[in-house]
Image 1 (tube, rainbow, N blue to C red):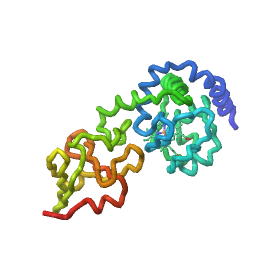
Image 2 (cartoon, helix red, strand yellow; image 1 turned 180 degrees about the vertical axis):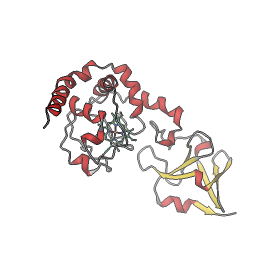
Image 3 (tube, helix red, strand yellow; image 1 turned 30 degrees about the vertical axis):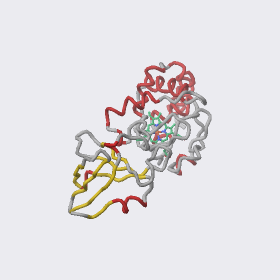
Image 4 (cartoon, rainbow, N blue to C red; image 1 turned 135 degrees about the vertical axis):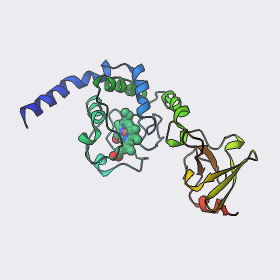
Amino acid sequence: MSKFGILVLLAIAFLSPALAEQGNAARGRKDFKACAPCHSLEPGRNMTGPSLADLWGRKAGGVLSFDRYSDALKASGIVWNDDTLDQWLTDPQNVVPGNEMPFDGIKDVGARADLLAFLKEATKPGAAPARTAQSQMKGMSGMMDGGGHDPNLKSLEPARQVKTITYCRDTYRVTTADGKMRAFWERNLRFMTDTSKDGPEKNAPAIMPAGMMGDRAAIIFAEPEEIGRFIEPHC
Ligand code: HEC
């Protein structure tokens, strides 16, 4: 290893252990907005990425209920602590080449310290699930862009409860429980499933706005088999 490499390692070893302690957790809570679209702090709630609850001391790739870890992360042998998390958040692809977290990293050492200070508290076993950062996001981005903590789809207002979907040429027509019908260009309507405890009841899909313009929506079904059954070709 070059002298420079050793120096860098020494510098990391010297600087990092204190990093989470140096940070400002209140600022870090805001920085967590960069993570919240993909990560929950609630135990067992996996999204694009695994739940971050109970992160310190756990093996990388170690959340058993998360099915989408890359082989690279699982084989990395990393145990998450102040040091390894600081390195991961600086440049994930450098730390675990081939991992599948779509995130470039946070280059600012102060921002990383803040975020780690927040995470260290918020991921402790028994820490109240910090939904604040996540719910703050929701209004911004339209929740179906993967953002934040989605509402329970079993208890929605009638305007969100789908009764029928018809398909004619390039148009889906969606009728909701409030009696309203909306037409969508076929490329603007997405079909999704949510089999979690927050998913919709069987045969009672939910419609959620998607994107900023109001012309797009997502329909979320209880299970994939429902999708074809629900859509009625009809002009
Ligand atoms: C666009 C989605 C996305 C964003 C944004 C994102 N992550 Fe991730 N994260 C993932 C995915 C997916 C994985 C799993 C990667 C793999 O298996 O290779 C992951 C893995 C991780 C892991 C390893 C967890 C484990 O169980 O081993 C940590 C820690 C983590 N992310 C922290 C963060 C933090 C902190 C942020 C914000 C600064 C962040 N991530 C932003 C999607 C994301």
